[in-house]
Image 1: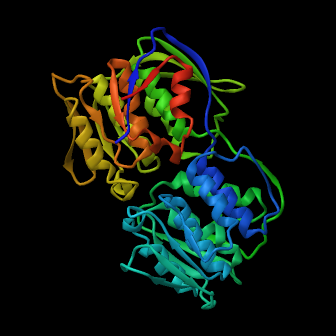
Image 2 (image 1 turned 45 degrees about the vertical axis):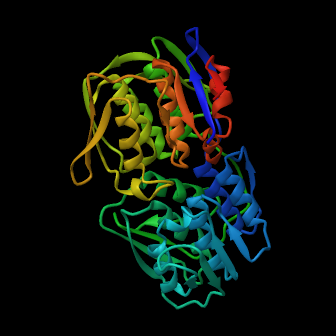
Length: 410
């Protein structure tokens, strides 16, 4: 097992950081470009492993496409390859093959996709055969499981002879990610519209050629918000972020305003500085589930009574993230307790402390490593399997070094 030790900077942090590009925007732009015949000029694509995997597989002529651990890539490629009419087998890591995909497969089958399960029903690997249009252009799908299923269908819908009417059943989770998808589709010439609060119509249209520059990643920015929050005094400017962002994780600005971080947008990004911390807070993560780990760890360190809801999708991510947060917080003297269905509370005990003998487990989850890393500001911190950050933020440890953190192999 690979382990690193993080040691806090000896001086106050006063720095600027050029963030990694958004893999959420990058992967959507790549699928749209592929559906449209690769006529777009995409700038500032993410260096994250998920995006590089998407690039590689879209260019591959192989029958078997291995998405590794990239959930977005698996879901987006399932819809694209199916509706494009290609014959492919999609597979991934053992954990990837434990992540459900049945809802998306059922939806695509109703349109005419020929998809079969190679091992366990409802899970990858998938075998995709040529598409035979069913004549059905009206489809219903649950809105509260994964917005990636919805985005996957929407982006590839222009391949269908009659477009599609997509009805979202019940509560819609991660809606900003759906809106990001729709906005990017519009940028490239397809005009999806909300017919009502639950139904989206994608007409039969062709994507047009165009240019697009990917924004910096708000998910990656969240760890820097936590660093400022837990610092005695710090000022960090994060470059490449937009105030009116398409990314749902820009919600970190509002959330962290109560956890000790003041945000000021500049011509180059957003400048973070210290402000006051509240004693208690309730946050609904329905629209920004990838922020939950970061905020939970930061609140535990401050002793804030944090109530979290909207965590429905966390158990089917790279790991069971609820279990992972609970396990690791307990080792420092805090816990995330489920008080009722989808209602959790962070509870900090009197003996909360950073113990250099405790090694934070990362559970093959990039966000576990980065969410816990800011705790090094409170004491030397050990983190296992640090290379997991390559999935979304390959330069994370180097960026920490650039602002004064020391990192040692242990």
